Length: 59
Ligand SMILES: [Zn+2]
Image 1: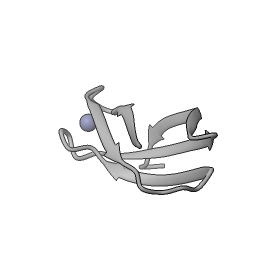
Image 2: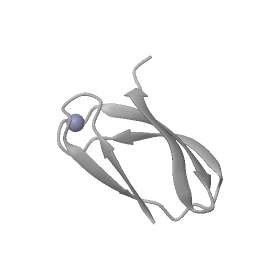
Image 3: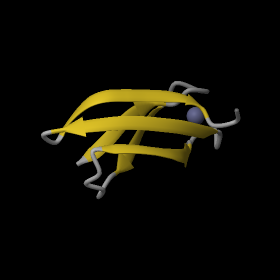
């Protein structure tokens, strides 16, 4: 599955290929458009995203 997020900085849609099977994950992803770091936190349940937060990775 892949995650689709809105960049915290430029609001562009970013698609992140995700091979992980963790039920909870937190990572930094640099936006392809503006190159700013997005801190992405998400939680999976039954392969559905039940919680997804995108904040600044600069904190
Ligand atoms: Zn961006």
